[in-house]
Image (cartoon, rainbow, N blue to C red; front, side, top):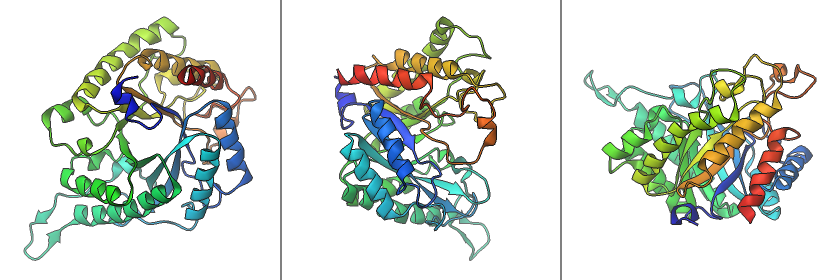
Length: 345
């Protein structure tokens, strides 16, 4: 196995993101344990356990744990223990959300400095101070719980050019956690360009780097497997070149597609208008795995996402099946099981 892949504990990420937007109490519930058992049945070797943290809006500088939205530390420890007992490695990843409905990738502030004498613009510094405090808390928890990896967050794209700030965050994580440290962004970040033009990029401070992979593999429903396989080759070349520049494991920290007709043309969308189509979701996953599996640099994928924690009734309006990202009791579950057996062989 490639030395790049082997830098990830266990050789390759292969599993799912679990608990995105899970409210306080969920990880301690019988339902969470049942979901852990289901993941084990598919042969996952990894799970990314997500703890939601909040800030008031996209321009707030303070991040915090919320009594309703943020899982308690003890239930995080408990569910991590459950996964470990089932033979899975765990990446703990806090993920930021905003109460005003904006998203992590909306977070941005004015450049720091002084325009009006005596009035310092220091929004970035204050936000990163809060990020550092958050990181110290959850990286310490990851250390105590024996997590094999710690994820800084995901898709904070508009913060990614703040190199010195992020280096301090990574250093804070390493001061309390001695495992594998990683993060991920979307293709809003041109990884290849960033790594080529900035040899001192903070990405190099990490042990691996992820991307959200939701690349359309068709313009609409009806694409053949051959057409999808041909279309994905551009992505294979791009990420192969990116990984060569990076020199460390590169993987998909999010990769998903809804089980909805036409979703392969908009795999990131939970609002696709078509009816249930589990086969289309399975074909998307199969195409991704076939295209990247034998790439020696590829560090694997974490499916987005295992379960739906938000109320979206339109995902359940087709009696043939649930139309969201989940794979349990759908054809994609069989795809995961077959490829996990290949991983274990």
